[in-house]
Image (tube, rainbow, N blue to C red; front, side, top):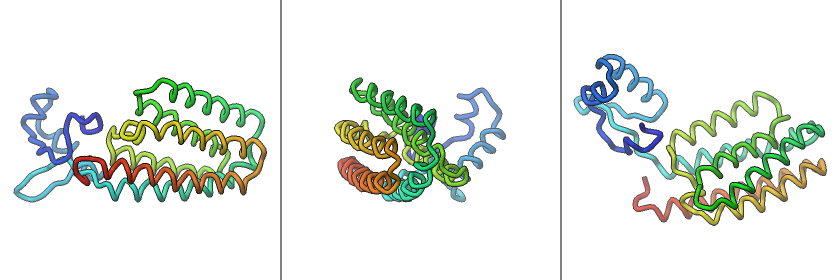
Length: 205
């Protein structure tokens, strides 16, 4: 319900109401809220109870920035390790993302295709590095809920796809340095697009 936006940031979580709505007793609801608090999705205060965490625009930018720094490293590690089979997966992910761009109006779908493409490009990188990147993807998903850059800024999907094509071309050529440089530029343009999108929201949260 939090991820889907049914419970918006700042919503007070009333145990009894949630228990009745979900057909559960109060204790599992209380336990779930403690788990959500550990995940950074709920804030709890004495005498005030629990509320859905406010989404910080600065936190979103920070998570994206750190993740993309790691992706620059992952690209450099991945390019020399790609095989003919893994490059075919990259091309397929690029084509899938392109089809999603042409189906305008579904920013969330392009967000998902975008992640699959990044993961395909970085698939041969060391597992621990990919795990760190995946964890930051998940943290970002929790932080922004279902707020997609490509929904907030629809034109950014086409520009992102152009950058992806250049990046994939460098990966296919086996040019790790150029691919890393292109990912660094992609990082800057992505952060700029997010800053623009967040500044246009009704509030900074």
